[in-house]
Image (cartoon, rainbow, N blue to C red):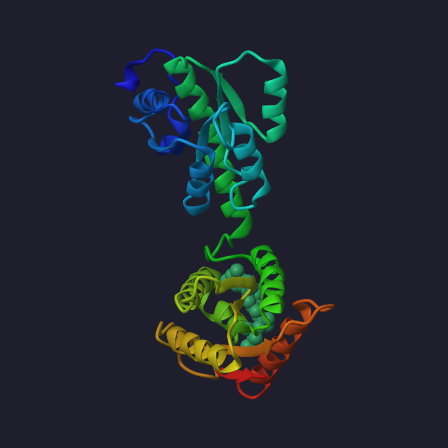
Length: 311
Ligand SMILES: Nc1nc2c(ncn2[C@@H]2O[C@H](COP(=O)(O)OP(=O)(O)OP(=O)(O)O)[C@@H](O)[C@H]2O)c(=O)[nH]1
């Protein structure tokens, strides 16, 4: 039905948005729902606390936020969303009944993406929502590209560096251990030379996926560390636990049965792995953990490859 409305912009990236409509007057929510429901999934909250709870639990793609509400008003809600890294990228469109420049200024300062006036004009509301959703989806896509490796699709080095820093501080606070596995494809230069770069790329994709499949806890991270080297970050994990994961990775990669005609280790592709565990200390950072794991990886290479060494 909306397709027939003259002047309607293309729906944002062809995707349905998840839009939270926040208004203390249920009748206003019903109006917004009627306008948006055909193209988007609409959720509702009738006060600020409910809205914040919804955003923390299941962040929507956008908020349509009433300015005047009893309790937490729209500006309070917006400010809190912008302070929380988990919600600060959600665009907020204020729905305002007053033509009040001072209030508008406060909304911009609170982090508004845009305004619409009550009573809302359906075509204007839809176009504003679509325009901001398009920007939001593009920003989401850029973030995925910036934090993931283009060849294998798993986390990239930047992603790992940031997560290592967070995991370090978390384990320091929790007085728990932080484990790290460095995994390097054995004799990969020879693999490329004998099978070709295209096969080399495909091999890295399969190895990455096999490693990723072994990450079973929500805070575990597998990343491509560089070339043919991968890293797994395992917060709150003991040495024994990390070695178990490394052995599973070893088995999963061998089970791929990728023929390596130039390997002196096995007939198929294998990994050398170094495992290290540390109880993070104040005044240090993840570099030491990386160095410890790298020493073990070097030991695995030197003592025959296709094995796990741990400290
Ligand atoms: N196909 C492909 N090759 C890559 C990629 N990144 C790195 N390489 C290759 O990986 C090879 C790594 O070689 P080396 O560092 O000498 O290590 P190795 O041959 O695996 O030997 P060991 O580590 O001692 O077992 C180099 O030839 C790189 O060109 C990639 O994205 N695709």
